[in-house]
Image (cartoon, rainbow, N blue to C red; front, side):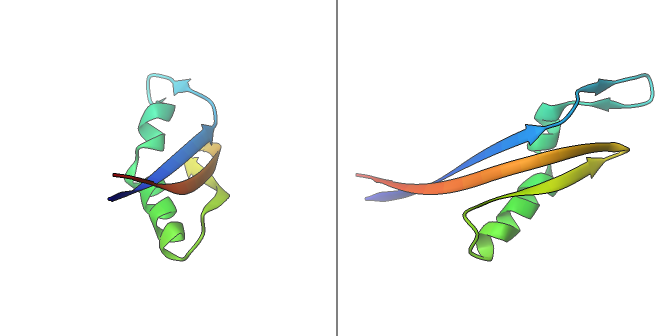
Amino acid sequence: MYKHLNISITLCGEETCTDELQISLDDVIRSADVAGHIGTLIGEGYREGTFDFHIEDNAMSVAWNCTTSESR
């Protein structure tokens, strides 16, 4: 039997692309900062939540939840 942890992450922000700064929401959602923060919250017993995230001068909102499932 296998136990699976499924994590869904939703990031709300603006794609930004200028000569000085290029922010890809895809990169942000996979960043160590976002993943690490969610991992810490899961370790503290939370199963869902939201938090603000800033990169450069861009404010973003992260919503996440996790569920478990089993398979054989």
